[in-house]
Each structure stands twice: as structure tokens, then as C-alpha cells.
Image (tube, rainbow, N blue to C red; front, side):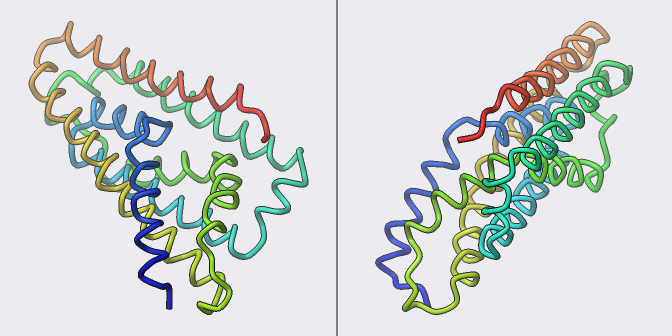
Length: 207
């Protein structure tokens, strides 16, 4: 049982992290611009589930292996770079991706994309290992259980914040993507966001 005082300290800290602009927020923004509110929410759920997987791995001690093995870190990182570039290319080459409000990526595909982007960002698991243990209390019971509770709180906040940003972007898409010229610029903006995230991940250094 996690003490109320611990939750009172953790929730504001987690919320501060959620509202800080980062890769997850930009990814959901890009999904909203590309495919609308529903896909943006699905993408934010995928990111949250990916985050929970990182939390579980951190709780099981796998994060220590990632921190100790530079090769494993780099393999995961470059898979993520490749996937983000694939999404950027898809946004550019799909002529119907942003031309009409009805042309959307299925929610299941957006969820998988969010999950993949989260899982292939090795910095997340290292961040979880650095942040969450500050709030762990061995006397409160299972350490893994505490990891999962704290991870669920972070994930819920992420869905609300990132999903909200994505929904806003999706509404804007519906307003501005009616013409072919606007659609082209929407695709370029979406591709630019994904490519920027790929570059950010490529330049990432191990802490």
C-alpha cells in the first residue's frame, strides 16, 4: 500500500513531467495533424502502454542491462530512428493523408505506432529508473507493484495531456485541411515532426 503522502508528492511531479513538451507530445501532435482526434487518442494510449512496459522492465531490473550495455541501447535507439523515418516518409507519400477530414489512419494502427515509438526509445526506461525509485518505499510492499502504480499514474497523465494536444491538432486539421494545397502543407508538417523526432533520437546520448 503506497502512502497518501508519497502519492501527494509523486502526482504533481508526474504531472509536471507530462506537461513538459517532449517526444511523446510531439508524436501525438503529429498523429493528430495527420489523421485526426481519434487516431491521436489511440496514439497516446499506445505511448502510455509502451511506457508501462518500460516501467515493468525497470521494476524487473532489465533497465540495469540497458544501462550497462551500450550496444543494446544503440540497437533499440536506431530501430526507433528507422521507424520514425518510416512514419515521416509515409506522411509525405500518402496523397490522401491530410487532404480530407475523413481520410484517417485506423485507431489500431495509430495505437501500434505509439506503442512502437515508446518501446524503441531506450531513454524512457533509463529515465524511469532514475525518477521512480525516489518515491519507492520498501516497507510499502512489492517494489514491482509500486513501479506499476507509479507508471500507471504517469501513463494516465500522458494520455490526458498528449491525447488532448493530439485532439486539438486533429480539430485544426479538420478546419485547415480542406484543400489540396493545405493538405500538402499538413503532410509536410507531419513528416517534419516525425523526422525531427528521428533526428532527436539519433543524436541521443546515453546518460
